[in-house]
Amino acid sequence: MSSGVRKFPRLVWILLLFVAFPGSALAVEDADGGGGALNSIGSLLADFIANIWHPAFVLISISAVVSGLILLGVSLFKFYKASEPGSNATYGSSLATMIIAGVLIAFPSAAGIGMESLLGDSAGDGVLLGVSYSIDETASNPSVYSQIMGSSFAPSSVKNCFDLKNNTGPAECMAGNIANNIVPAAIRVLKAIVFLAGLVGALSALFGARRASDGRERSNGLITRGITSLLIMYSPFLLEVSTSTLFGSSIDSTIISSGFNNNSSLLSYTGNNVPDVLKSYVQIIEHAFVILVFFGYWSFIRGWFMVKGVSESGRQAGSYGMAAVYIVAGVLLANSQASTCVVATTVSGSSDLLGGACHAVL
Image (cartoon, rainbow, N blue to C red; front, top):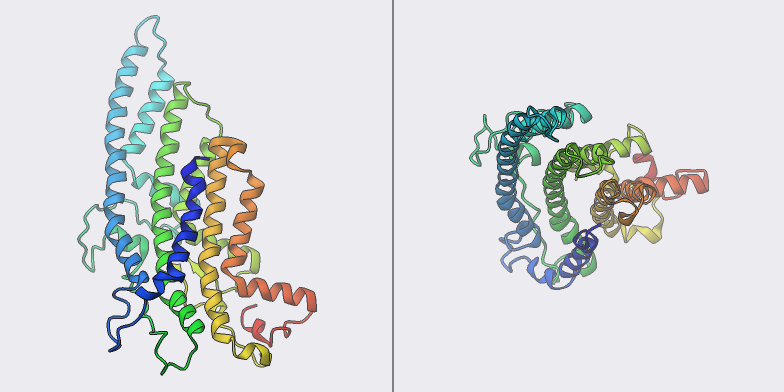
């Protein structure tokens, strides 16, 4: 695994430190109560990804098309060389290069076909098939960003945690600002970046197949790299399926195909007999459930990237077993209330251990 990939998780901790300390000053609502979300970290993250995603997507797509056109010319030249007596070029390698060139020219629609084949209409819904590169959109012709990321997004406004008129304490207020303003935006940013990373990974697998056709690279792991890249592109849908696999189809996953599910019953802590020692911390517990969704989603994605890394670099990037641990841990962490209820029910033999809260989620 490259040093950049190894150091990337550290950037998340730096971001969280920024959010927890100096970032809280940015997320303070104006004294008159207006414009709270305008200068918050959540709105900055949302604006950042909305501004850079489409140009990055277009750059990746055009690079693929240009590379495909170049490879098409290379394949024709290789066909010519293969026809010459005594040449080392082969028709098989020439044909493989031409097929790869065609896939690159058809990119990202070719990636959309792969997504549809792996995940079905419920995941891709034909978004990348014949996609338009235009950034302008109308109700009848939405941009690819809107189709991939869903409807327009605006983070919740933040509360002034230093206003003594608030009924909540500072700790609960700050946790609420992080959970309601930052976490949904951070999950959206992560989803958008991972989608682009999946596109780049699919391109990398195609270029690897091109080199393997010439005998310049081993073909081991190319299929795994390609499939993993396509799965990574729709990581929220993959997490939703994994959640249903672990907890059953009736579970209300916190991450669904469209992204963060802020209406999930797993994000609220309610019960008929909540212990008195927990009643004063119900809001903080609920905010903690939301914050843990981001860490769970991050762990889940890291596991799949480790699968891709092992297929590329072997044991240096980890192991498939370690990747499976990250993936399962991510699912459990993203749905932390369901995980807690399963453990509590297993240990006590009753779902009433947490005051009946588990009846609503399991």
